Length: 381
Image (cartoon, rainbow, N blue to C red; front, side, top):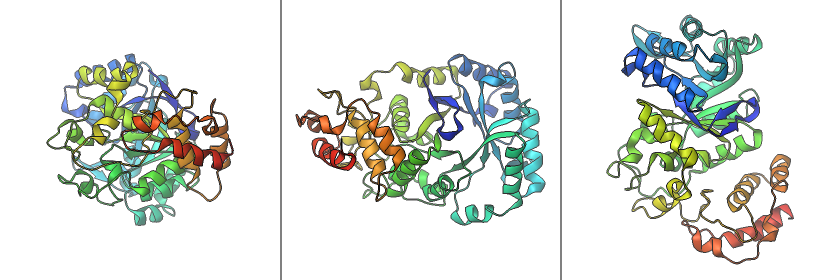
């Protein structure tokens, strides 16, 4: 299992993570064994947004033998009221719910304390001066949570969080369909049965979020990577074609700043299917050809860092060079961190011999050779 650094947290998390939202649907022992099986496959990050006692107790039992090997995303503000999930900032519920999380997980710390589910810009602003945020800071200052994160489906909120100075990582919804949708404060918009056929390419707010997170070293973990399973069914997919588990995983992991995709697992077979990504071939990972030839929607003219442009005869990592160029052009001056990352590459855009083999291989009709000239002008090498 490959591991990636989760931004400024410094935590080395598995590329494939565990989203625990389906645990309560199974007998407890079955779900406990599922967590242990995931660990045996190298998965080391688990998200617990669920407030129900059964799910939390299952996780506690599943990680008790190797707690120190797991990184837990524990949500603050996801509470249990009258036998149901209740999202709130009311400290009468928030504090007891978080203390219950610690108790049921059999731990005295949470690696990633998540400000739970903020999709409204107004709510984000209100949280800045609140007893809720005071509590989050108290947990951080006392070491009960090691790092502060946030979960959101709205790129406008996530951008504000990334620029806040105290958020260290973001749990965000990413897949090729959602990436085309404009920002919204209503999560139901993301799961509408019909997408607007005029949608083309990555929404600017989402592209900006990835750029800012990369620049500021804000790690991203991914939720909703499969769009609730819609992308596996050509009749329900907004593209009109089916994508595989491996293709969806690869799409998420090729976004800037992304460290891990958290998959919802029901069975050991589903874990095996996701973990196959680690040894999958380029053809198996290839989401670009599928999307480019889909009857609905398009990313035409936009680099998605898919790697189809390989191989380069002079060894340029074209996808990475393009990624740094896109990140650099976010501002009027090239950020020093991005310039440094670019300069550390083994080969640079200036080495391009304009063979244009990459142009012919790009499924989205990006003129890569022309971009190499622009990149050379921007970075000077």
